[in-house]
Amino acid sequence: MALQQLPDYPWDLMGPYVDRARSHPGGAVDLSIGSPVDPTPELIREALAQATDAHAYPQTVGTPALRDAIVAWFERRRGVSGLTVGNVLPTIGSKELVAFLPFFLGLGEGDVVVHPRAAYPTYAIGAAMAGASAVAADDPAEWPATTRLVWLNSPGNPDGRILTVDELRAAVARARELGAYIASDECYAELGWDAPWDTERVPSILDPRVIGEDRRDVLAVYSLSKQSNLAGYRAAFVAGCREIIDRLTIIRKHAGMMLPSPLQAAMVVALGDDEHVKVQKERYLRRREVLKPALEAAGFRIDRSEGGLYLWATEGRDAWESIDRLAGLGIIAGPGHFYGDHFPQHVRLSLTAPDERIDAAAERLRAFGESL
Image (cartoon, rainbow, N blue to C red):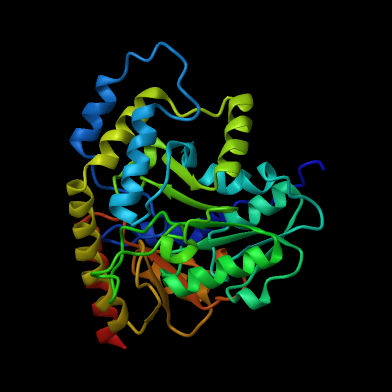
């Protein structure tokens, strides 16, 4: 089936609000896109620099050192044991995998891709690119009989929802009942905030408590963009079902979808060092602790947001009205309309802004709240 015309990129609609925010005397505070602003850790940059003599083609499956590092990281940081190098594969960022996975798995007309009700748009775009249909549903009982792929996202973007072991187990059971693949986008898993996730590990779909030892048709997708400030490196990977990994590997070999060798070397170092991840999480926690109460003081309610990189907020009015009111304060956020049809009164605010800009936004929000 030929690729159908895709919708316009939604962020283009933000132009007038961005212009209004930029006209604020104190300048704009851009909390709309979750693009890291903090430095890439020095030890990772050094690893990249030392690997720049990259005269040979890189390995599609990843170097032995990288594959070993991914396996070790899953066991150490995610509580996932039993993986081998045959269960993991590096990818050029996670977005390309999300977008192409339905096509790579052979989905097409008549097939359904399920994704969360509050969802990153690329899940639906990936369905469209394969000629399949997208359905937004959180309750496994609502997943259609024609479902061929289920996307989970925990912690969620935009809503920060974290799925428990029991919720993950129920999702896997329903997917298997339907004969569907199930993939969990876990890119924000190091960023748990509210109890119990402030002290407990955010569970992975590959956790033995979820699937036992049966990884059949199950994938976990991860990116180092947020925890290691590597968005510009496009450093990510997928893990799980050996059969699917083999299929993806063959496709990527034929298509030349290879992560550059220097980036693979940098990923090995990033995956092996937990200290820089701790430092980055503390930065985001500090920003969250400043921004969240300021939003509440300005009349917003924060929903979910127990993990991840965003605050999912509403003041009980259409999101575009909230976007306009925030723009008047010089604050740029993302409207809930961009994340599906179910949350037209929510806005998403990112924690990826320098401390000074977060402080400025909080000061403006508190002043606005006092004027109400």
